[in-house]
Image 1: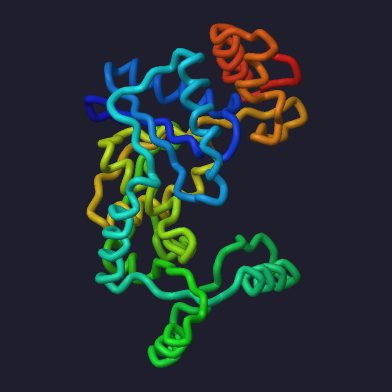
Image 2: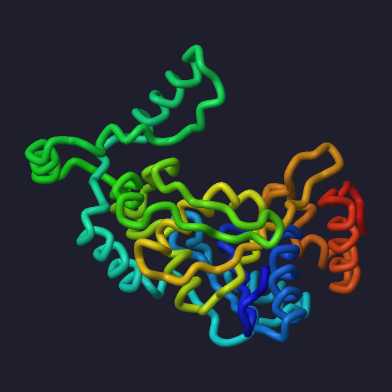
Length: 296
């Protein structure tokens, strides 16, 4: 698999807490791949969820920790909360293609559906939206909208497949894969309180930053087919992906922001140096992502 040159990667943290070692791994992987190919690594702040990212100190902390680590980025920093008009234009394009429909289901109703599936005789069902609002009669939809019933906007992935078929996507580790849009969930692309979703914003922003290699954690692999479909239907270029392993403790549990001892700030306060932290990350990667209890 040949990479396009210049290679452009990105690091895109969500400022919903302190930067932790998992973030550092993602930033290091993106910077390292770009440097290996003489390319560029961009920085993006993914703060569209204002309920989770409303503390300005978290964004300031990200900049401070990255500076301390010595991981630098190229070009201007992209901040999603400043780009709502761009996402609205992408959403309108999908609406004009007849791909969006209002979903009036509450979270409680969807959870009840999931619970009923879990109790059914068949097993292994993925927790995904059933599509119950996909084919509501037009007059019923008009009535609910007229009454101001709360709703979200979902994308009809069956219609997406009718338009784009089943496009391919590539991963540096997994090789060539095929996206089957109809096998993807009809994802929510906008809500009243959040005018765009992660899935829509990320494909629009990757294209705007000319990112052609997306390095990110393996936990996001399941969303790649949906995002590849969005790229295709919006006429955006498809990057190559590199889904890297996740850091886990010795017991196998994934490290998260809740692991306060693994935050960059806490490590700095303990006197850990950037060189020591990056060396520990490299050791963890060599061990298959096992961070351990006291790697430093």
